Image 1 (tube, helix red, strand yellow):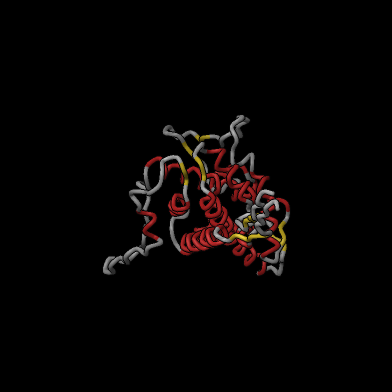
Image 2 (cartoon, helix red, strand yellow):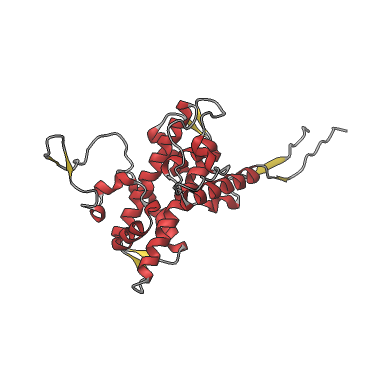
Length: 275
């Protein structure tokens, strides 16, 4: 009889506890990346993007929950979202969604052209090209899971706005990550720190220095984890939210890499000979 090889059962990212790192599934994140770029996306980049999106949405939900708590409510309404953004400008992300949501109607102000004529709002396009706005519903399950995890619920209009913000933010993150790969690093963005005239500016931390990268490692066809982190520094202009997003993304990808190295061996090899 021939030898029976041992069966190897991999305990990787699809079965390890790292799956709980984000309510936004890797398959959904990869779909968003495919919508904006033909580049290959590494698994660690997928986990990093999912983690950053989760961090941003969690921060928004917590701020809105605080606004609702002042009125002794546990169900979030659009007014809570506006209050959260008004109190913390760091939460103003996914701006392209604002033109499509009644919640944000009128907040962008009236635009005038060079001759002083009011520019009408942009009409919704029926283009066949996939868009973050058209695909916002894909994020509903993840948003509802985040809401449950934070101990709150939300009216449908609020869920819709959180869906849209998540979709637009992740789409912009994917687009910027692809730009980082094409341009070989972050060339046009950095960190701005406000200080007084007689106070020396602080030196950037290793995490914040990502915003000033001029070169990158890796091939020119693959979006890696560091490309997503660099894109995060573009999307989140600074402050505590950016730092938290970068830190949690690093932890998430580190957990992924650790899980990917674990293997379980079941069965055994048996070799017999005819006597």
